[in-house]
Image 1: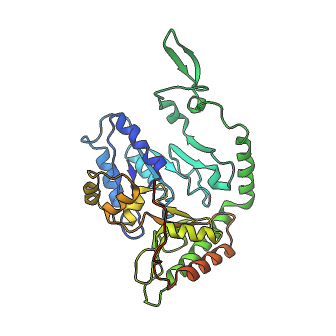
Image 2: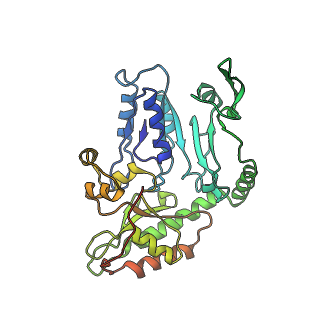
Amino acid sequence: MLTWDNHNSVNGIREYARAAGAPVRYVPLTGPQLRVAESDLLATLAAGRSRRWRRSTGPGLFAYPAQSNFTGVQHPLGWVELAQRYGYDVLLDAAAFAPTNRLDLSVVRPVFVCLSWYKLFGYPTGVGALLARRDALARLRRPWFAGGTIRAVSVQGDWHRPLDDESGFEDGTLNFLSIPDVEFGVRWLDSIGVDLVHTRVGLLTGWLLERLTALRHRTGRPLVQVYGPPTGEGGGTVAFNLRHPDGALVDERLVARESSAAGFSLRTGCFCNPGAGEGAFGITPEALRRTLPRQVESIDQYLDALRLPTGGAVRVSFGLASNAADAQRFLDFAESTYLDRAAPADTRLAPRDRC
């Protein structure tokens, strides 16, 4: 069981579940802030443990993000205990949450937690962590083995004995040159103070949201459409689209090109979170069913079939290195570049080749 609002790294786990014959259920998003209604969560938790859906006596798995990588919505940490009362193990995706929020695992006790060191302090890249309760780790069974994961193996005897600890899940040679840098990064972040980072990022996010949403074209139409919370509670993430004076969306590819030329590092597109994107853009199951049978060869054809005017959104993210000058400069850029500017006649944008 998982929420619509999940990174593809979590969505992909459903394929393992289905391959093993387990049913998969999603909890939808509701409202303009793209949150999960707790009543929907409770109904899905209960249905998932009913005789109709349960095919084994073992626990189910509930996976959800502590913070959305698309909108910055922070889903309640109390859902961990709630799902456990219904008999679920919980995988908490803390990759977007941990960089600017304190996560106390002596209070919130999921079975699995995944996070990224790169997102916490910018280095090293490609090194993350999966935290696992030891009793849960002992229940996992790998369907294959690789170098460094076994105690012994025989070719002629056709048997193998996996390692009993976490090494049994770590394929090949670990990045031992970069892993020690994690200790320095954690120590550095701790010296700054996660609570201080949280306060600072929240203030920057709230300030930018307040001023972006106040911008109006001469036509009276808003310049910005925000997806997710309209205040600084979104944990440093501001997802939005810009609009022309007539209300049409500014193509996110154009924003990517022009913001890059102005020296900004922004994220544009679908953000590897299709569920939140489908909720944000009002894509219905009926529309998806009409589109699937068609021969869609490209992302642009897919968007045309769904009658979507854009391939995603723009995302501004604040972190421990962000300051007020960064937020002010982006606000000035958005206002001077897009306010009261009609849609360009010819932008010659590159086709969307993937999402």
